[in-house]
Image 1: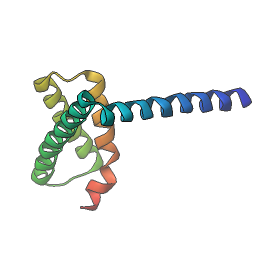
Image 2: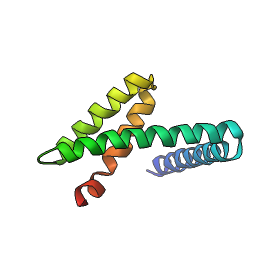
Image 3: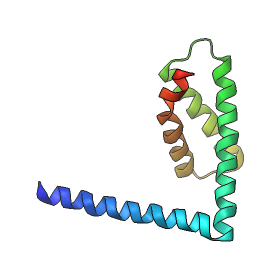
Image 4: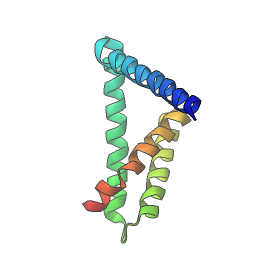
Length: 104
C-alpha cells in the first residue's frame, strides 16, 4: 500500500511540474502566448456551437449534453484538423461543466 501512495505522489508531482512548465511556456514566451490565444479562440468557437445547440434542444439531459459535446467537438476537430488527443481533452473539460450548464 505504501508503494502505491509513493507512486501516486511521484506521479502527481511530475504532473504538477509538467503543468507548471506548460503554464510558464504559454505565458512567458511570444510563441507560447500566441498558442494560448489560439487555444482560447478554439474553446470559445466550440462553446458557441455547443451553446447554440443547447438552446435548440427541447429537453436537455446529461446524456443529451454529452452527445452534443461529442458531436460538436468531433465536427470542429475534423474541420480544423485538431489532434485527437486535444479533441478528447476538450470533450472531457466541457463534460465536466454539466452542473454549470444544467443550472442555467
